[in-house]
Structure formats: structure tokens, C-alpha cells
Amino acid sequence: QVQLVESGGGLVQAGGSLRLSCVASGTIFSIDAMGWHRQAPGKQRELVATITSGSTNYADSVKGRFTISRDNAKNTVYLQMNSLKPEDTAVYYCNANVATILASVRDYWGQGTQVTVSS
Image (cartoon, rainbow, N blue to C red; front, side, top):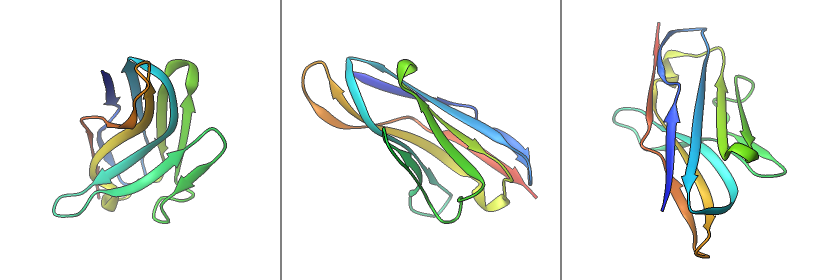
């Protein structure tokens, strides 16, 4: 059993910053890619950023404003969000590709954290 728990969401004014965190716990052997997605009301879930051991990838809409990082010792992924815009308002979900100690490999998702940016 693997759980991902996000934190750090909230209400912020346009131009402000937030830092999201996501901790993975449970029967983890190793974690490959980790990432953040978001879903705004009435829209499909979209990729925000991903990180592997050697690279990062960002949606065009957040490049230069958001930074993804991870602490492998803590099984944690972060998303530093700067220069926030009202269109960044969404529920943010973290995900991780996890190999468990039972030798299964699959993607796991967190429950989501709300980010609201006021104009």
C-alpha cells in the first residue's frame, strides 16, 4: 500500500507564490518519475511538471514560473510556484511511479490540494 499526501495549497493574490509538497509513504522500494498535474473546474486534468532522476519537464504555461524538485531520501516532491496567475487556479495532484517491495510497479496519485489565485 502506497499513499501520497499533498500539502501547501491555499489562497494567494496574483503575483504571489506558493510551495506545494507531496510525501509518498508505504511499501515503497523505489520511485521513478514524480510529477504534478492540475484540474481546473470544467476542464480536463493537465500535466504541470514532472521530474525523474535526470530531468525535468514543464507545461509551456508554467515554464519560467514553476520549479519542480524532489528529495529522494524523504520520498518527497515539491512544486515552487512563483508569479501566480488567476488561470493557475485548480486542484493540484501529485503522482509517482512506484515500485513496491512486493515487486509491483504502478502510478499512484494524491488526493489533491486546492490552489486559488485571486486577481
